[in-house]
Amino acid sequence: MTLMRQIGWLLAAVLLLALAGAVGVNLHAARDTLQTQLRVKNSDNAQSLALALSQQRGDAALMELLLAAQFDTGFYRQVRLLSADGGVAFERNGTAKPSEAPAWFASLLPIESTPGVAQVSDGWRALGRVEVVSQVAYAHDELWRGSSRSALLLLALGVLALLLAAAGVQRIRRPLDATVEQANALVEGRYLIVDEPKVPELQRVARAMNGMVERVRRLFEAQAAQVEQLRREAHEDAVTGLPHRAHFVQRLAALLGDEGGTAAGSLLLVRVADLADINRKLGHRATDQLLHALADVLRRWPADAVLAGRLNGSDFALALPGRAVAAQAAPALARSLREAMATIDPALRAHVGAVDWASSGTAGPLLARADLALARAEGGVAFAVHVEQAGDADATAAGEERWRRSLHEALQGRRARLVEYPVLSRDGSLSHLECPLRVQLDADGAYEAAARWLPLAARSRLLPALDLVAVRLALLQIAADGQARAVNLALASVADGGFAAQLRAVLEADTQAAARLWLEVGEGAASGQRELLQAFAALVRPLGVRFGLEHAGHELYRAPRLYELGLDYVKLDAALVRGAASDEAVRRFVSGSVALLHALPVLVCAEGVDDAADAQALWDCGVDAITGPWASAQAAR
Image (tube, rainbow, N blue to C red):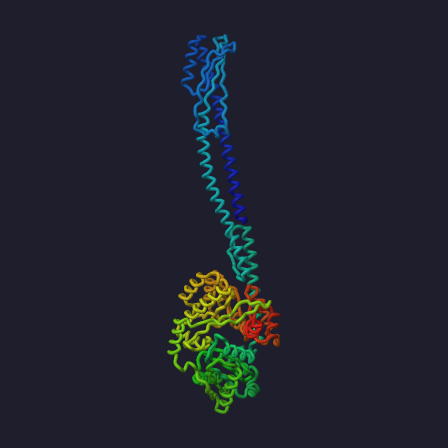
C-alpha cells in the first residue's frame, strides 16, 4: 500500500473515531439530561399532586377523582396512592406509548424514569404517599431526533474535514510525486528540475534532489565534452579540425558502400603548392592561418551532406554525395580558394583535381582517379582545375522522369522487400535484424538498394510512402517469426505529420509486433533537429517501439541536452570504430562513448565491423552489439 494511501486511511480512521466519539458523548450527555429532566418532572408533579391531595382532608372520593384527573391530563406510565399502612389506595397504569425511535436505539440507550414520591397528610395526620412515573417514549423520541440531527451535522463536518484532509494530502503528494518523477527521469537519463514546495520538510528534500540532479547533469555534460575531445583526437586533424586521412577514407568507403548511401557524387582534391616553402617564408602561425582558411572553405561548402578532410600536410579532399557535379564544383572551389588565400598572401597557389562517381564502389580506386586528376591540374597555372571523366554511365542518364515513374509503379505494384543483416549481442545471440528496403524499379529487374533510388525519391517526396512500406513489411515479418527488426527512416518522413499519423495507426493495429520493432534515423540527417526527434520518440516509444540513431558519433556529443532526445539505442558509425584493435585513440573514444551512453541508459551498437580483432576490441570497450560483415559471417556459421 502506498504511503499516500496509508496516510489517507489513517486520516479517515482518525476522523471516523472522532465522529463516533463525538456522537457517543453527545448521545450519552443527552440521555443523562433527559433522565434528569424526567426525575425532576416526576418529583415536581408528585409534590404538586400531594399538596392538592392534602387539601381534600382525607376524602377518598375527592382524592381518587383528583388522581384520575391528573393521570388523564399528563403523560404518565403510573400514578398511585399508597395508604399509611402501605396498602394501595389508588393505582392507575397507562399503556406504553410506541416510540418513534428504533428498538435497537432504545435498547442501546435505555432511559430510566425515576418515580417521583411525595407525602400526603391532613395536618399532622399522615394519609400516605403518592408516586408518579412519567412515560419514557417521549424522551426516547426526543433523543432519537436530537441524535439524528447531531449525526447528520457531524457527518457533514466529517465530509468537509475529509475533503480538507484530502486537499492537504494532495498538497503533500504533489511534491512527492514530482520527486518520484524526478528520480525516475534520472534513471532514464533525463535531468528534471522540480519546483521547491512551500512545506519546509519537503522543500529541503526537493532542494537536495535538485542539487543532485544538477550535479549529475554537469558531470554528464563534462563527460560528453570529454568524449567529443576523444573523438577529435582519434579522427580529426589537430590543426584544421577536419577528418584526417584515415578517417576521411573510412567515411568515404562507408559512404560508397552503405546500403542507404548514394549512387552518385563527386570527389575533389586540393593541393597547396609548396607548403614547406610557405611555412619557411611566412612562419608557422601564418601557415596555420592558411590551413584554417582552406578548411573553412571546404567545411562551409554550400551543399548537403558534404564530407571534407585533410589527407596530408598540403592535400585536402571534398566529397559531394548526391549528384555528379565535378565539372561545376571544381572551378567554383578553385575561385573560393583563390579568394581565401589571397587574404593571406597573393602569391599563394593551389590546384584542384576532381572526379565523379556513378555507382557504388570502393574508396581506393576513386581516390586514385582523383589523385591523377590533381596531378594533371598541377601541370597548369595557379588554381588550375582538371576534371577526370568517368568511364561508366550514370543510371540517371535515362532521365529523372523515368525513375520517378518507376518508383510510383513499384509502390503501386508492391514491388519492395526488406533484406536482413544480423546484429549480434555480446553473448553471440541475435539482437535484431537490420532491414534496409530494396525496390524493384523494373518489373523483371533486380531489387535495387536505396543508393540507386533514394536521391530521386527524396526529390519526388516519396520517402514517407517508402518508409511506411518498410515498416509494414517489418511488422509482417516480426509477426511471422517474432524476431526484432530495425528499419531506417528518412528525416523527411519523421518530419511529415501525415506519415506520423499513418505510422501510429499501423503500429496500434499490431502492438505485439510493434513491441519488437526498432526505428532509426541517421545522425547526419537529424543534426540540429532535437525537438523533432523528441516529438517522434514520444510518439512511438509508448507503443513499445525502440527509437535510435544510426551512423552516429560524429556530431552526437555536441548536441545540446543529449539526454532529452529519448533514444533507446545508438549505432556508432563504421568510420569511427574501424581500426579499434590497432588504434588506442579509437578505443578510448569508443569506451568513452559507451560509458556516456550507458549512463542515459542507451544501448550502444558498432556498425560496419569487418575484422575479428576489431570486434574483440569493441567488445572489450563495452559495446552491446555489433553489425557488419564480421557479424554476418558469424551468424552464418
